Image: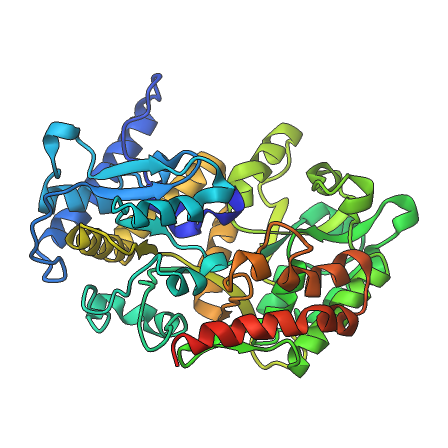
Length: 472
């Protein structure tokens, strides 16, 4: 589940500025007070912003989510504090929260539950954005356009306009993009590369030399399947490598889906995926670990690169570091290597937004909350405090944090909508679903991409045409 929690939603509750319990000591108390003061100053400055809509929010904002739903938004963080100070607490007789949290129960049934509530007239107001259900969620009337609700031409949205345009569907906007972050990085251990006599990938990236060819040379040098050595593991290196060409398997252009399965760039990327699979550079978790990921193999130095998002550090890696006594610079991350035929470092990106649900009875609440989120996300002091918390609580190093910042500035974003055309065709849960089969069976079983593509080309093309036909 954590894989699909977007980084912005994590950031939204990451800066919990409540005092730590248990006698943190004088230094910690001073740091916490400084954080309070800095963020309070930022919130106070924003209170007078003309970008905050002049509305009266009388209802709590109904959020439908899943597992630990109450953690999707930390109301003590800057956006929540700004909302509370500007608009007060809606319906205070029902508690001090500005959000009414509701759990959909079973994660796999989250869209079915959303549909039921909308149909029954009990629609939530907001729902976490997932690329794996967009634009299909609009097609089946789960979400409504934000045009006329959010003024995307306003200055606070300027940094997001290009990304927002990539999500336009049928001439309308549905996604208020506030931040971008690469979907996946390649994680590696410094000492493992040094012992193997390999150059540092991040240094190569900064020098403009980190490309497929160099990556493959490392795979050749490190991989030794007979002795349990592999170069790559993770769920989705296939889709990340495709995106380094500058396109996704299915993209959105001019408000319609574009099927790129026959694009020469995709074919070239899948040749690389086939090479990785057929030469046993990939850790075969389906064979050696009953389809489960084996993080201990990476920890032990038997896997060179691991494909995962930035959340992996707080979820697991810093625990490895502390238990094993690794040096602060042992764990490193780097974007995916550049396609040698591309002049840019293209990278699959994920964006952050709450969708406005069809049937919402609190559009003003959605508008106010969205504006609070975007305004606080732009504040330098808030960014600094979020960064300090990552360093303080999880031991992120300055270099690691710089990489997170650099990737947003330097990489060229690619958005892939291959999983957003309906779960029956584009579902991500099973490799057998058509869209996943086309690339995953190449990665997992070293099958031919051409053969895998032809098995489902018609099904995928028909679905793309069906969705496009709905906005003709």
